[in-house]
Length: 371
Image (cartoon, rainbow, N blue to C red; front, side):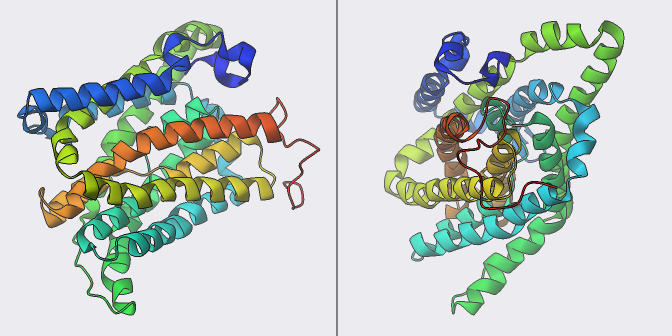
């Protein structure tokens, strides 16, 4: 993500790097390349998945770490405390992520997959896993607050360790009984979740913090902001494309073998991303948050931790289960949909917010100003 995207306009867009300007095209090509590799070398997926780190293939894990580090290196950690002190902002995020999000996904899964309990369970597991990785990329592309996104991701990670197993039991075992259906037992280890959080959020977060702290102390803020960050910034998108290629290479044959099932799984996921993004955006505007805070809230509410959902589905139901297939479909749907939402967020910024990120006087939200 280049600094030039901070003010999205036709003039600025013309100055974007080729990688930034044609991102949807590169993502589409990455998907096709991954599918092609998976078809040409059927054993590529099992080979890539042979060595795992925290339940995730090491090559894919390397891509996740690669794409997260540059984003976290951009965070101004000295200003993070300001967001932590905003209880209203933190409260809105927690309600969106841990109450509204799981309920919306549960409702969509039961509405659209009532006759397919395996896929339904897999989709519900996705809704319970809040995003700790790719959301930072989408937020950065949409010019959201990096500092707030880092805080919200860290906050979600803590709640994820504590609540994921409890919510899995509630939404897969207890609530279905209330609806007259059979429940499904889910055994989720708290350590399994904590390990995933420590590796895929903790490591790049620590690396980003140390980079800023040590390099600013040695070379100064100007060198760090104007020389170091522009050099490493574009590598985040390269890491994203690399990860997409591997995901499609590993799962492409399974996806192509079940096109109708994939379409049925994709429908509630697409609706979920759009509904959660719209709810979060509307709530943030009603609360009179600025654009950067609104974008961060919307993307953290809409994104999900598919790595965790897939690991839990495989560990609980087996690698060939319909729950595992639903987990695999998740990131394949998220990538194009969230890219679309990045453009939707930037369009909303031009229409409803001032260049400084505040609400325009012509479209005030129906609430009192922030306190």
